[in-house]
Length: 183
Image 1 (cartoon, rainbow, N blue to C red):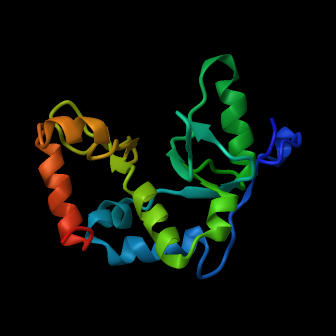
Image 2 (image 1 turned 45 degrees about the vertical axis):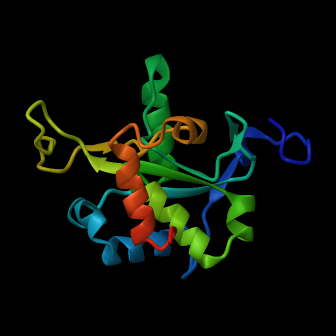
Image 3 (image 1 turned 90 degrees about the vertical axis):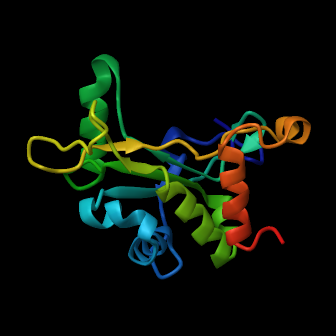
């Protein structure tokens, strides 16, 4: 794989551990979980998150991926090997989630944007639901975690042409107004 300058990068160098400290993603996440009521489920369940910096830019659909929350799942015959490698890298226990952050973007971003990105990615962590819509727990009583999709998935051109055709759109506009993004 090549980095942004076109140089080859060894697979072992694709990621590095995230920065520690007050402006590092771990500390920002901890503060957001304490401050924000929308993360009450994270206070109670305390999922383990491994924060990694992606050293090679990722582009998906023509867009630079700044961060992504992932469930560390492996498939097929090598699933046990992947789980073992991750557990070894994490001191014996695999995390519940991986937060992958673009290192170049992170180091160029101010604290406000860093907090916004971490808040966005924490929003993808949800408590899995059973068939009745109730929170799921494992045999030990721990939450079963899941990834949550965005509240709004829409194209600007569709909204421009058809307006608030879906109930998600006015809710998003209201949230934008409340956050000071619209006057």
